[in-house]
Structure formats: structure tokens, C-alpha cells
Length: 328
Image (cartoon, rainbow, N blue to C red; front, side, top):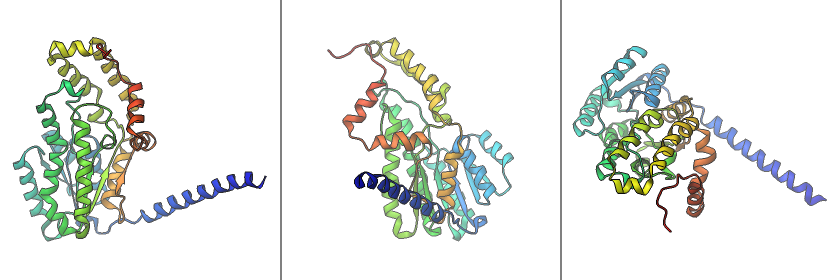
């Protein structure tokens, strides 16, 4: 009888420890850095989505935001929505000259105080498809934005961040932890994770913090049904007939149905869940090494990434779209 009573007591004890830990972490992470009005934050990909919201949010918090956009409209919309302290600039992360030009402008702006933070948010999700639908140029086009762009922007301002003992915030994805689809997207995000980890260790002696954001599914251009549908149709139409026969027209139909139904339903519309993590990474005295916004990230994708490959392969295959030509 006594042994039966021990088990509930043990579980209550463990629950109490968990509650105490999270309470301690919450209190520990509350303090914010002072003198925000003299701290410059450089954000990439501010035309829409997370970057746009973060620029507005940090501007309201009092930071000196340098918001880079790919389009003139993106710059114009931000200037209208924010204070006169916010600076907008054109940036193409694929262009060495563009990256260098913005870095030179930032160096002039920040002076001896240095750059407090860079948030590498710019990214694309197409072209995406099974690997044998793609060419090396498809891989290169995305890696140039999602991975090489992150590295190029970071290196261009790293001396300024070291001077300020500031932060590098890299936006990866849960698909930097587990790969469930073909194409360059997950490869680019795995690369961001690796760059983030190596840079964090390299910069620790200089007092620079390197943080990673790993969002789940959210309603941005990355999960936009129209963009993804157009991408699949374009790639299908250019495939050789042999490859189309391997997959079959039903595969195409079901792939498009997954995009319009499942992806839309899975995607969270509350982008502030991600922006709040970004803001914490930039402004907290003691930021976390990693942030995983989204319940799908916390409760499904990240736990799944720790499972054995045989288990994850089996689970993912259960929901896979069947191909026309199966191996006998």
C-alpha cells in the first residue's frame, strides 16, 4: 500500500520541480537591456511577415532599427508606419555589392558604439519539390538567399557587433532539425543551424551572443498557398515525361491538395509568437540560445527530430503521397 502512495507523491514532486524551473527561467529572463535609444538593430527581409512586424515592434520599443527591404514598396510602407528613427534601405542578400553597401552605411551610422544586433530573417521557400524534380540551379537559387545570404550579411557587420558586444539572431526553422521533404529548403535551414552553432562558439570569447529562432508553421510567404501552388505547377510542367510517368498525375493533384488544405490549416496566423521570440533575443539581458515558437514546433516537430531515423521515416511515410510506379 505504501508503495502505491509513493508513485503519486513522486510525480507531484517532479511536477513541482518543473514548475519551479519554469518560474525561475521566467524571472531570470525578464530584465531587458538599457539605453535602447542608442542601440542599432539591423533586420533583413522587412518587406512582409516576421521581419516587417519585428521592425515595427522594435521601433515602438525605442530601438534604432535599420530595416532592409527587397522592394521600394516595402521601404515606403515601413516609413509610413514607423517613427522617424527607423532607417530603411534596399538589400539583395544574394549580391555581394548590395551587402557591402548596406554594411558601409551601417558603419557610418553606428560609429564607435558598434551594431547591437543583426536579425537574419530574409528567406524564401521556393523552388521546393521532390529532389529529382530539381536542378542544381534550383538548389543554388535558394541557398544563395537562405544560407549564403545569412552568412554574407553576418560577416559584413560582425566587426561592428563585436565592438558592441551585441547579438546575432538567425532565423532557421523546425525543418533545420528534421527533413520531411525534398529540395533545398531543409538543406538551407540545416546549414543555418550549423552556421549558428559554430558562430556561437567562435563569438563567445568576444561577449557576442548568437541566438537561433526555429519557428513551426506560420502564415507568411513561406507557407503561402498561391506561391507554393504556382511553384509546383511550374516545376511539374518542365519535367521530362519519364519523370511525370514515375509520379503520375494523381501525385500532382494530391500535392496541390496538401498545399491548399493541410499547409493552410497547419499554419498559425499569430506571427507575434515568432516576433516576441525575436524581440526577446534582441533585448533580453539573458536571452535563450534557441527559441521554438509555435505549438507544432514544441509538441511535434522538435520531439520527432530526436527520434530514431527508422521511426521518423516510418511515421512520415504513413502520410506520404503514393507514386504511380512502385518498386516491385
